[in-house]
Length: 472
Ligand SMILES: [Zn+2]
Image 1 (cartoon, helix red, strand yellow):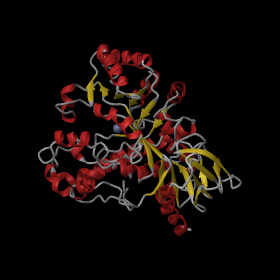
Image 2 (cartoon, rainbow, N blue to C red):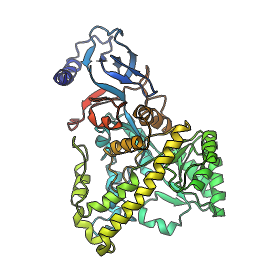
Image 3 (spheres, rainbow, N blue to C red):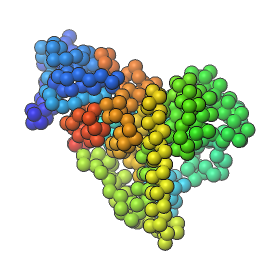
Image 4 (cartoon, rainbow, N blue to C red):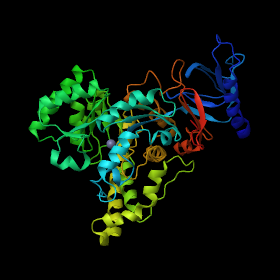
C-alpha cells in the first residue's frame, strides 16, 4: 500500500508536466479510498475527493464518479483531515530566548535587534516547518508591523501556510518595561495610554490588514487604560474588525467577554471557570484558544541550557538555526541568573506548572462541555514552543484534558479557520473550498497522537511528502 501510494507522487508530476491534456480540460486529481474527516464532525469511509486548480470540486463515497483522465492517487487504508490550523503563533519569536530577552537575556551574544532584523527580512523561515507538520494555516496574534504583510505574501505561496495577523499588541504595561521586547525601529507592544491612541492604532492596523486587534492583558483597576480600551472596542466595531484578548485570570477573561472579545487567547489558569464565564462566553460568541503547552515550553527551554531538552522531530522539519540554538543551549547557561539554584528553580517551576496545567485542563473540559468553540493553538515562537512541531504536543494535551479525539479534529481545523475569518476558504473539506488537507497512516479519531503519523500534506492542491525537504 505504502509503495503504491508513494509511487503515485512522481506520476502526478509527470502527468502534469507532460501537459498532453487539451487546454479546455482542467486536470483533475482524485484521492481515492481514505477514511475522510471533513472537519465538521463527520467521517466517511472509502472516500473520493476530486481536486481541480487547487480547489475541491467533488467529495463523496466509493460511488463517486472519477472523470476519465484524472490522476488517481490510491490512499485506501489511510486517513484524511483538513489541514491543521494553529490559531496562535508569533513569527516575531524564534522558539528560543533570542526572541524573548525578557525571559533570559542573551543579548550580549545574540543581539535582539539583529534577531528581529533577520526575522523581518526572512519571514518565511518557519513556513516549511508548519506545512511539513501538517499545518496549512496559522494566525499570528501579535507582532511587529511587518507581520501584517505576511497574509498577502503567504496566500499565493504554496510553500507557506495561509497567514492571518493581528500586528502590534495594545497593553497596560508601561512603555519603559516593554523596551526589552521592542526594537529601536518598531514596537510590537504599545502601551495604551489614551482613547485617541487606541482609535488611531485600530484604524492603522486595520488599514494594514490586521484581522483582529489584540489586547495583551487587562488592567481592571487602571482607569486610563480601561477608558482607552472602551474606545478601542468601539473603534474595532466601526472598523468591522474584532477584539482578541490575552487574559489568563478569570476576572480579566470575563471583562474581555463583556467587551465582546471574539477570540480569547490562553486558558484561564487561576480559578475554575464559573457559570457567569460560560454565559458571557456564549453571549460574546467567543472562540477559546487554550495554548496548553506554552508554559511547559519555558521550562523546557530552561532545560535546554543544560542540554536536557531534545527536539522530537522525526521528519526533520525544524529549521537548522532553531535546532542549533536548542542543541547548543549550554553555551547560554552563563546568562542564567543564580546558576547555583538552577536545578532547584527548574524543579520548582515544573511543580508550579503542574498546578497550572491541571487548572487549564479542567477549565478546557468545562468550556468543551458547555459547547463553546475551541481552536487548537500553541503560542509557537515562545521559548521551548517550536514552530510547526509543537502542534502535536498541544493536540495530545487537549486529549489529556478530557476532550475526545474525534471532537478535537474540528478544533484543529475548522475552528482555527473561523478564528482567522477564513472559514469560507479552508478548515473543512467541502466542495468549493481550497484543497488543503493532510494524509495520516493512523486514525486521528481514535487517538490525537495519531496526527504524528502524518505522511503527506496538500496545500492548494499540491500534495507533498512531509519527510522530504520541499524542492521548490
Ligand atoms: Zn502569544
